[in-house]
Image (cartoon, rainbow, N blue to C red; front, top):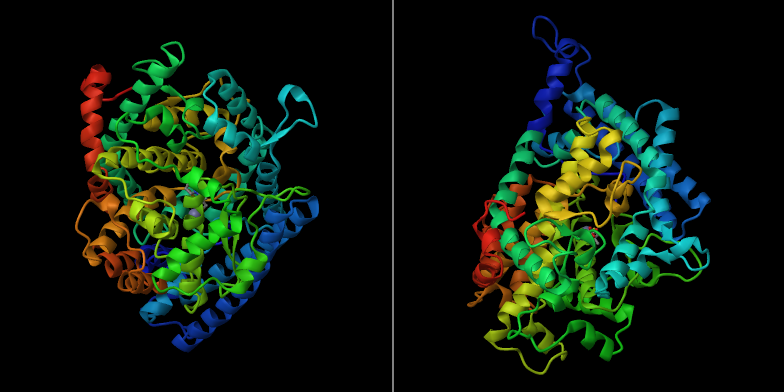
Length: 620
Ligand code: X8Z
Ligand code: ZN
């Protein structure tokens, strides 16, 4: 977890822009280099010093961040804000000083480091110390407030519910009134920091501008080895590739919810109310599988039940994830991982429960922070997080500025790729089930999986659509909530369960908005993981449908994966992608292939269940 930091971007993208800015002072009128023209040796030295300094400040900031997240108090919040401030100040100063070397011809790797240095922040701050101080304090306070967030039904203190109390209710209850109360309850947590968020946008934009970017959103979009506008177009291209698959799942889901709850709660042809999808943000719908399950395609087992029956504890759950990675030839997690991680929500102090994986020293001190609950969703999440930790350990030998994933989506995709190999066959090898269900269960298995992965796609896309508009000023503070729900309707086809106004701050009730973590990465990961999985299954010579393929125990596949992870951010991401898949474009055909049998089945059902929606250009 490096909230304060982000790396990468192609030298190609930035250098022309910077050279334009600097042309007048960097070259003599006659074209000769100025007397003080820097040498390559100076550039190497500058970069070596910069990396050493950032490594040291990064370690301090990681420690402070860890302590705040696992022990939220006013003091830890202040310490974290301070450490981030120092890191941001150093990057800002170094990026400014690095301009001196803009005109120098540099070897490729060195040029890449100079380019990455300018993108090393997720949170750019103004050079003015008072403003930088204010911004880092706001950032720490919003994450802290989210982490401490509680809702007290009927205002009764002593009966207050945390997000961790509310999520299981939202997952399991089928009472629309209770669901609405819980949904509305959690969304009372964010309005107190709505104004702070507006100030946060103002200050971080000022920082981004000072570093030469249009705004923070443009800075985030510049981080993909291509110009920012091209990246936005890539996102849209991928979304258009998967939209028909989402629509098929959506139409089926709405029809089934309509059958269950009736027209008064779920309209046959309008937007689905957000509180009925089993998840606080309606972002993944696997918790309502029971409402949607096809009658004759029961997989015959329930992973949550199995884990509970076996009295699995949180540590054991993590051991299962580790076991998959070691089966591929990766090292066991280091002892410090087990000593320093947080697996269980402490009873006596506040923590940020949202799961995250940390690389404290960018070497071996990796950690998991997660309030683990024993169920199938957290089984997946553990694999997700360990994917981060194994990536971090794989690129640790790289120089500091290359210690990151090929692009942000890669970091999010690795653990999920591994979890796609958690097939019935694998569960049988673990001794969880006695026999692998036959093909008749495939629709059930695929539906359950699609409810986690396909349902997520529009949400993964829209969170940063919202933030890009907010950072660019297209959406001002007076329209935060309206813009949020416009996007939720446009992409997800959902509506708020109760009347909303600009007193609310519903985007802020999502962790990544409160904690300023970019979100496009999750959309990319949702697509990349299937591309990775398809390539790994091909390499394993697997014959059969992709959803039955597990690469468990396959050392050759593991070695190839490791090679990509070890590259870190040293090369533009298409090269890393090619290393593992032989392809150099992000491509949604793999997720489409994976769910093709399900889509055919859904389309058949939908003809009966919702013929009007099937015929319409837009299902809602
Ligand atoms: O935040 C996460 C991970 C940590 S990087 C648990 N995810 C996104 C979310 O929860 O919104 C994983 C999938 C999407
Ligand atoms: Zn993640």
